[in-house]
Length: 339
Image (cartoon, rainbow, N blue to C red; front, side, top):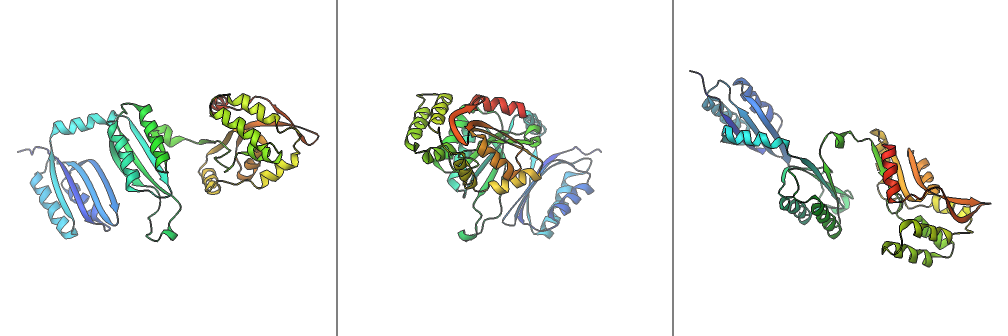
């Protein structure tokens, strides 16, 4: 009499050791079982392994008995949960739902940070499929800890309100001192080979126009224009022209002095080296100045630099710029052009 196929969820937990997965899957292979899904995690040498399988032609009781004997030999705990065909088909039907990757990065990661991200995901009606630590294991001695920690969430579903979700991520990012990345998970995320950076207060820990203004003796005036632009009283292009005009007469040698002492943001040296190693094209798209962008281009072998060109006559700034101003709109155009 032909045996009826059954779908069974097997959950294994216990101390991790070499060979656990190999031994248990060999039992399934002996009974010609079909593995429908499998996942494994190892936290502090504690194994959690899940295998969803379908018996094919063998008595399920014999399969489970053999698995129990092997689990005893391996000193791991094993549980079985039968799955109905209807429940399985509903689960299969969910695979077309959107997938997203949420990455959080900070000096250290706390339970509060993890809880805040998880709550936002839950509030949007989405489900976390997988969580993994991207950085190294954390020593208890804080003096030995790496200056960064990162965790990645794999999330399935469609946000009820994506704009609200991103705003909430921005808020907790500021409140809890961490960075959050929210990306659709697909081929394009994995195939990216172009990365574009702002320059001031991103690759370098300063605003170059402020440095120039201080050297020109107009630091307070330039700062006031910047603050007015941030309040929305004048747009970026107008504020840029006004600030450039105040730099008139500044000797070009000052630009070289500032370039040679730029405060590079922590981690940039390693980041640039790794990006080049894995084949990325790198661009700077900046509302700052090409003089300093080109300095970074030579330092890090950057492929493209688009910024604002200051007019120089007889070794001094004229207070004018050359060409189009690189503002937010222009950055978007340049990104599409480079891509």
